[in-house]
Amino acid sequence: MVLEPGLISYWARISIIPPTFVNVLDIPLGYTPVRSDSVVGDLRLSDPTDILFPELPYAEMLALTGKAVEGDILTAVEVIPNSEMQQHVWSKYKKDIRYQWVRLEDIGRCLKCECVVTDVFGRSSEVVYIETTPVLP
Image 1 (cartoon, rainbow, N blue to C red):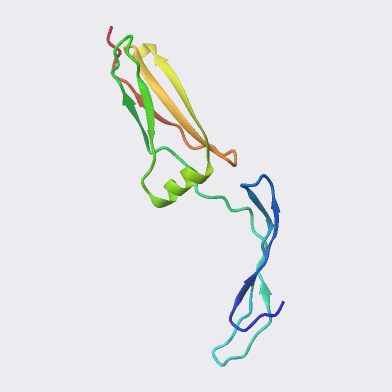
Image 2 (cartoon, rainbow, N blue to C red):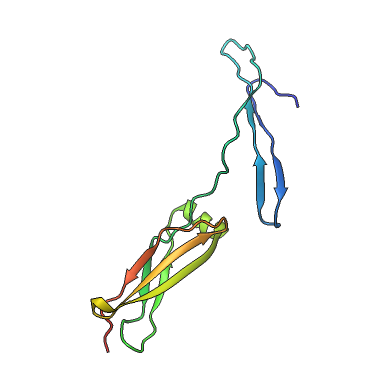
C-alpha cells in the first residue's frame, strides 16, 4: 500500500454474518504526519478500540388511546424521539418493543403500562411508563 503525504488510510477485515449485518473485526487507522515545512514522517497506526455501537433506541414517552373505563379497550403507543439519529436508529436497529400492563390495586384500581425497547445487539432501553387515571366502572 502506498501512502501519499497527508492522506489518512484505513483497512478492515470484515466478515458478513446474515446478509444485513456486518461484523468489523479489526479496524486499524493509520496516518502519515506531515510537518509545516513539508517533511513527511513515518506511518502511524492507532491502537484497536472496543466495538462501537450506535445510539440505543428508546421511547420518549408513552401515550394512551381510549378511556380508562371498565370494558373499554385501552392501547399504549410509544412516542419516538424526533431527532434524526433516533429516527435512523429506530428504522435500522430496533428489534423488539415489549409492553407490560400492571394493575395497581393499592392506588384506586389504576393501570400502569411499561415499555422497553430492545435493539438488534441485545441491549435494552430504560423502562418508560404511563399510569391511567382510576378505572371507572
